[in-house]
Length: 393
Ligand code: NAP
Image 1 (tube, rainbow, N blue to C red):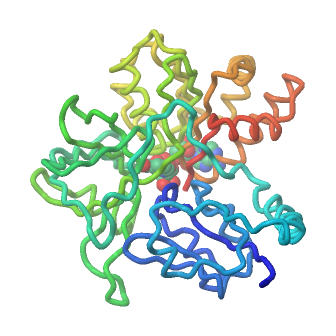
Image 2: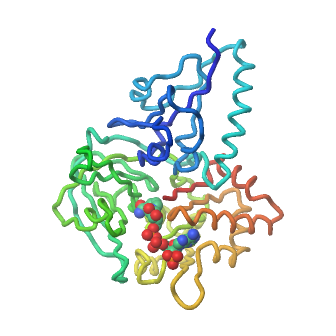
């Protein structure tokens, strides 16, 4: 019998096709086709460089196998195969492999990232209906500027899918394929944007979806999207994401921490709750960081959201003398955050700049200490229960 090996795989249901793992792998072991992102078992040396950069944890899948799954098999999957039963004979081998792998994985997971789970009561998401090879075509219904700061152009883009099904849940993303080709003559890869509208459409009952997109200097896709005009068409992939989802349980409490355009999914969550349970829900608390009120997306409409639906902590980094970040305000509101963390109904969502992760982790560590608890232990319980979600880029 061939000795069992632990094969590195990617969960095609959870992967959001951002290709960050592929770009990070130092030895070219990760590749993609029009549908899936896969790991070449011949090349992968389990160095774990790809683990912490994955925004969803879909990269963190392992199967003990006697014959590794081929690339062709992986390209054909809609979902991961279960661990096959290798019988008693290989059990010792599996345990030994687990110990070595567990040590490497623990190191890779030292940061805030990790393998998240969907909230227990979340609706089942549809994923990967439209791929690079078979994208959906959407028509632009609107493109509205959201910010007054001339240096900070953030747009609210509404895409209409007409008769094409596009079942997106709040917290999911879609990909936009920029037109044209890259330097090697290949079509551009899609860029991902979180959907900022609720599941029943930006306008209730319409088959449309909104995005929140910031124009980046020299950004190929963000400039394409920010310049779109009503009536233009765009090629769309997705939906993606199966864990950063809203609990359907109306009594769940939400603690949402975001920066800039990372507010997109929080808008979708807020609109969904507003349209369903309103102020009678378990409550939503938001820490939202931006440079100034003029550069905070949705500043005007957000101000009007009633506080019984959403408790807002708007935090500005470039107003006045001292810089304030979301993590500073969380610590200033230590008792409020501690009260939320101590409630098993609370779900935490962090979305925005990758750089915020460390600061937010430090803030949670300090709040947990004030409760006499270890943040890492609390976070891991929340993550296992589908109550802790991070999506940063
Ligand atoms: P931004 O305007 O550049 O920054 C927003 C705020 O975050 C600013 O006040 C900034 O302060 C502050 N900030 C900078 N470093 C920080 C840190 N280490 N900790 C805490 N706060 C920090 O943000 P943006 O350009 O909108 O970018 C948001 C990010 O979200 C992007 O990376 C985007 O890819 C990501 N994202 C977007 C979506 C989406 O669908 N749109 C979804 C998920 C993630 P200063 O600049 O004054 O230092």
